[in-house]
Image 1 (cartoon, rainbow, N blue to C red):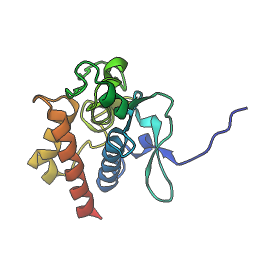
Image 2: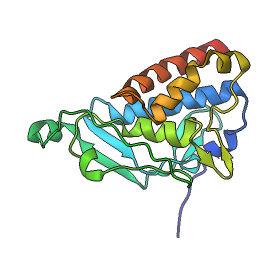
Image 3: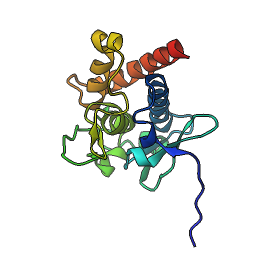
Length: 192
């Protein structure tokens, strides 16, 4: 017997939702990435399978929910800081994976469990859900595809998404993720 609980529509069903809704969902996804990476418990929860069908949106409150947490790696940051494995205090940047399949991620479980500062969740959310690199069920462009003309013309959103998915600067994803969260919050507040 298998018991399931309906928590809302898959994130995928919002792919062509109004821009304002997609911005809000993108902001929530980036907040989830932050909370799973940096929290008071000093446990990082790294999402290893990030795709549109592993998230849902609550029907009443519109909150993004992780619905498939089958592939999550738990790293005890307190233990990493205590044991100090080699390079434990060197920030780890996940490598961009330009594959021809849906929901690709490259990662090393050993490294995720041996570094105190890791950008994996930002990488996973940006690459597989938000940026132009995100592909799903024959679509491309990610959740933030086709922004309004003034946002597209400005170029800031595209630049932040690109740096978050495939950084050109050393440690660029960390900064881009922070700025992207702030920018999406600003866009979200402007449209509410």
